[in-house]
Amino acid sequence: MRRRSGSEEASLRKEHGTSLLQVTELRLSFGGVRAIDGLSFEVGAGEIVSVIGPNGAGKTSAFNCVTGFYKPTGGSVLLDGTPVTGRRPAAIAALGVSRTFQNPRLFGELSVLDNVRAGTHLWLRQSVFDALLHTPRYRRSEQEATDEAHRWLDFVGLRGERAGLVRNLPYGERRRVEIARALARRPRLLLLDEPAAGLNHTEKGELLDLIRRIRELGTAIALIEHDMGLVMEVSERVVVLNFGREIAVGGPAEVRRDPAVVEAYLGRDADEEELAAAREEVRGGGEVGGGGEVGGGGSVRGGDEARGGGKVRGEGD
Image (cartoon, rainbow, N blue to C red):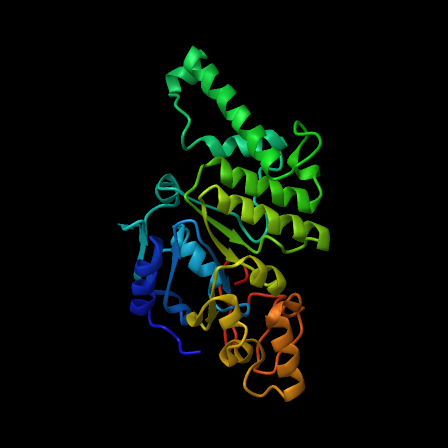
């Protein structure tokens, strides 16, 4: 499959739909390590796009640049045509971008309900004066936040007690709470960073259904995921990264046949048996990796070490 350039990809998105997120020639370095090296991709309005690649490929670093957690050293990020490169996370969130993390980042000392209520702060209409005096507007907005939180907890399928501390929930249910909180911000673009990590087979099936229902709301989704079965099932387009650059962009059927994608996971020295196994994984047979060493000299899963040298800061890519 011939790789499309960033400009070709942009032209394609203009023909087939509105581009909500446009990342162009993005670069990010940590000392001597290039975490992202000229990355370009787009997410259309209401589209599900998966970003895959070996650990250290730059996936989470790209999300961190899009959401303002990292300041890129080059390139641009546009949200619905508005430049957001290097802006503060709060300013980008206010424009309609929300995210989850590889490891759920919740307020452990708050209740399940209050964690989701926290996501409503971007659109609540109340002032410090209202909060101090408990004005009628304050009481109305607090009730609205509570109702909204219950609505999103219902939407993600969280059952049971919501007044208890979130830290007491099982891992899979904490994942649901984090997604509910992200949705409570009423985003136009939702970034999900390995939402299936740590989930069992039943929970992954429920996550697949949830992602589709979020898209039906009109929300665009960018998804980082190592579970190839989920990626191939839910994605409309797949962007494959390696060494901080996109090496393949296309529909799931195109990407899973691309030799460069298999090579990115196993390296050039892989034998035929390893290549056949990798092709089966990319076709949707399950998770890629499992912590073992790979033929090309890097780890797939199980760490954040960049293939070919150095560690990439932050959560594993």
